[in-house]
Length: 173
Image (cartoon, rainbow, N blue to C red; front, side):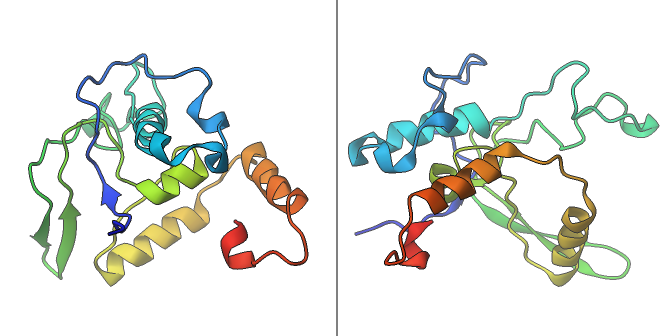
């Protein structure tokens, strides 16, 4: 039976060392070159290399707002959770549903295993349960300034260069 990919915050590793970048770097490997029996270890290396947040002293994540000065603006570290649950938060005008994932690593980003294997880098992923949260999320990303990345161009060119007219576009990427 094939398991469906799921969003996750569970780290298969139990030793969360800072020195987690393997050689060769996980992001430089091609998914189609990784043997099936090596996928679990590849996943473990990939999430520990790309999906673990690091709060550095003067890092990008540190808030400069007076009330949260010096705290991680992405809310790391997270509380450890033994089970996934849905939490309802009531405000004066509405009730908001939020999913809290099972978590054994306080610095692991929520991620999707299948996307991690294919993107081979950090992926911002969030499960959205209500309309207001979806609108806020879309507006945030539509208005966020992004630096032009060479990795997306390289990936696009790799797909195009290794394609033919007979390829099925649904399975090619």
